[in-house]
Image (cartoon, rainbow, N blue to C red; front, side):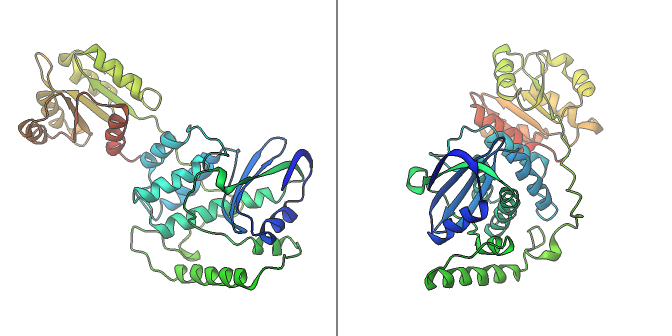
Length: 343
């Protein structure tokens, strides 16, 4: 299935051929302004995405889920964009990063399997609805063996889409029809599951009520502010390099002036070096905790000490976390994201 030259395109017939041949692979379609990727497994759709702001689309659907799964707040969604939004991608090597992001949310247990499946289904249906409006383009099928294996979270039957478009349905083997019927029954059973309070209830009544003509408001963008207090220029520079592309980072090298500057900046997170002259990090943390505005602000102690006494002292003065030098960029980023306040 190859059509290298841009020409008139019939998406319905293309999908029908995928079903008829029970194709497995990635259908790559290029139109004048957009590229599309449709992952299929034995004629059923695994995932669909396109080049039009894929992470904004995923973020919008995650925002909807956050009404039922509060952990999917701004901080976690920002972490998803940071980890996968600029990740290198080649269609003949791996699955698209937005699907990788869903798999990561599932692996880290931020989503339950049934929630991840419903998320994939909704994103895919949105992309597929737009794909069916294409009139021109070129396409190529990338064989499944040419890219990395990945879990099929929600195999989607293409037959309903073809029925709606009036396309003549392909004749499927009885075993395939039985499999599709079994999967449909499985989806019906899933919709009867009553998920606990913090989980997504898979039912039409649980969906946030949004008028069809009015998309849900985008999650507000917020520039997190981080203050780092350390008398070492090299540590300050390292932290700025690691965090500057995601946050507003303020550096303070004089601990005696730190309290006044922190009160002026009002940061979302404070990184404090422990071993500073005149005023160490423990004392500064204790002073911050006595101020009403900073009682709940995350304060992370940054130190080369690893002893239990040092950790106990950090806890005693109200520190939120403990980061040991030398640290790597992933270690710092993980610590920061774990303590970002919800906005």
